[in-house]
Image: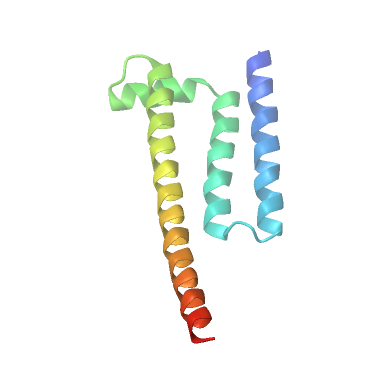
Length: 110
């Protein structure tokens, strides 16, 4: 029997995945990013339909409580996404520095 929490998780995952589809169609995310988000949200749907998968996986890796594997995985995912954001911000900062420097040199020539 499916619970309300499972239904809410599935609805949320479908909504979030639809946002990824729209961003991909608008070319605001790459196919790699779209694949990443598709795998995340489809994993949420699979786990919502078959919650025993988490128990099986947690036993394989030696973690006693199934909820712990979800928490650990979430923390790792958050750190990965934080790293990606950091790299993107650093790239933007470097690009902005180059643009400002070029604009200053052009202004000085005039």
